[in-house]
Length: 66
Image 1 (cartoon, rainbow, N blue to C red):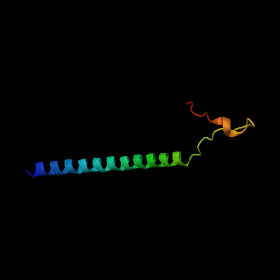
Image 2 (cartoon, one colour):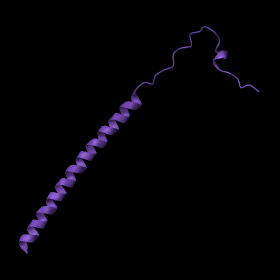
Image 3 (cartoon, one colour):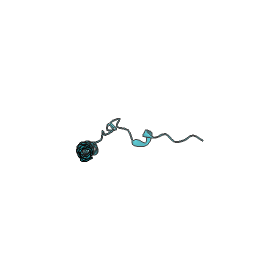
Image 4 (cartoon, rainbow, N blue to C red):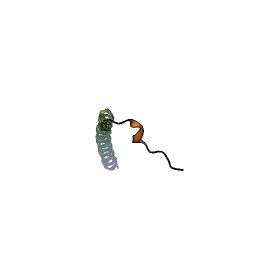
């Protein structure tokens, strides 16, 4: 019976070691994703080209027709 307890204890220790390794790997992945998201939010957005037609901006919008 003590042999069986020793085997179960070893299996439990191995299972715990694998769980901790998986948790560390997942934490690393989450950290990498957070960094990527932060990098995306820091990127400058693409600006629309300047209105260079030398006309007033009134014609940039069209009114609804009745």
